[in-house]
Image 1 (tube, rainbow, N blue to C red):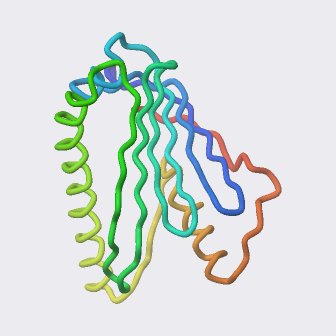
Image 2: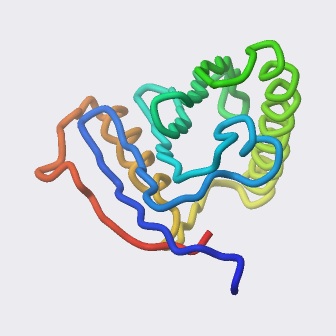
Length: 171
């Protein structure tokens, strides 16, 4: 596929965190790409999970552009989670303009996540339990599950090697 690009992914884990570092990604297309990097360039992109329930998505492009989305996830019951999110940024365009554009994009992304998670809960309820599967490109899922299970048992030990794996994917 001529439009796809091969990138490298590193998955790194400590006793309380796991993160996926994506190398070789181009800036996103469209409005978000223009906001992050009006001049183009290669992106530093990291997805992160921190115990007990914090997720972060971080984008950097040079010294002038940095966007960090942090979300705290608080379980209410077995099938309900409350999400609190903060978007922090340093960008070379006026902050008011960034807010006008990023706010609806962020809300749309969180709404997408909400719909996907609702479908997941319906499936779990319909089949009477969880039976999650993972693919090769699921950079964080298996490690997040391992962190959560270890924490539930009161075990918080760092792996022998922080670098869990490296792999390539087409985006």
